Length: 407
Image (cartoon, rainbow, N blue to C red; front, side, top):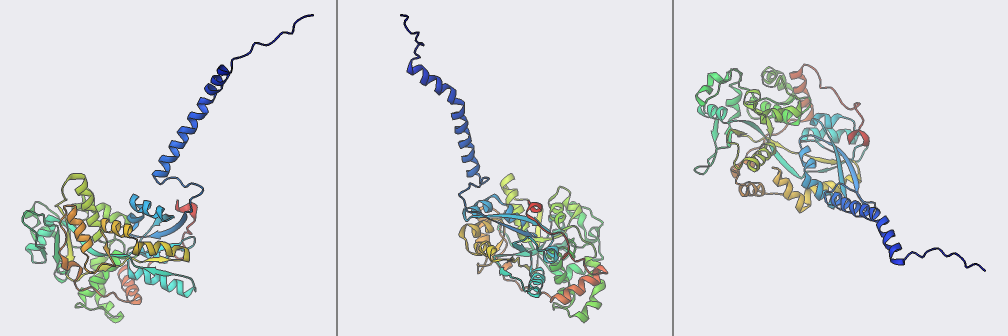
């Protein structure tokens, strides 16, 4: 009888090792994938399935830098919020289609008023939040400021010895009276510059921008002997206002033009917001170890305060407005981006922060100056129409915002 042929037995240890070797690629892939997920989650770029994150879509004007800031994005993510934004001029924010939006964030009261009127007429929900302010200023360059000072139109704020002079006050009546004068005639060459252009502040288009509309209000207020003009007075003021504000730049270009290497030629005096100038100086200081003492700012003696309004268009968006007004981390970051907190009584948070960054701070009275009273909507629309020669185009029936289009 033949003995059965038995298969050779593979040692158990060899089989176990063999299986381990075969499984190594799979295990390594799991380890690498896990590490990648951790990195993405730490960077705030990954939404895990168990995270409860609400995405809010909004359109805003000059405060776009706020929601693009990595620290703000991180803080909002901690609160379960993700924000997608599109940017436009304040007037387009106010008159454009609101379809698909959870909130809008125009840069001032006139544009906010337009939104309120639209929502009320449609019987639609809106809730207003006002977390911070930013004065409208005339951003310029040291030679131009010195030339205006020599003409007694501007005056530098007092600064400690050795500290660069970044802040000036400007008498608007005197400044506007120079609108037919050229810079070279003012003796600009004494300060190393030549410019044969007229002495005017460059604005964005008054059909697009809150800063331009605010400057128009300041001009009208000044020309009307420091009082808000009536509709009847607009006709007599219109020729001078058209001369001063007849041209405008696209809203997104003016700041970029001012901080460019050729800014002193292209935009010698630009109507901007204080927070833009301060944020620029903070970034410049971080990059170069000192402030840019050639770029300076003129504060009108009669202060023109921009008042950005966050407007929730549904109850879900209320949460973001509440955080912008009350969350300690967000308030601190808003200060670091150059905004004056609405909750602050004297603006000391902003000045204290600038000093910690070794950046000269504006004098304390810059937050206490007399403020320009804005005309009502009908007067504002009349002034704009007289200057432009036509009504501003309405964007109400323009592009509808969709989640895909805003990404």
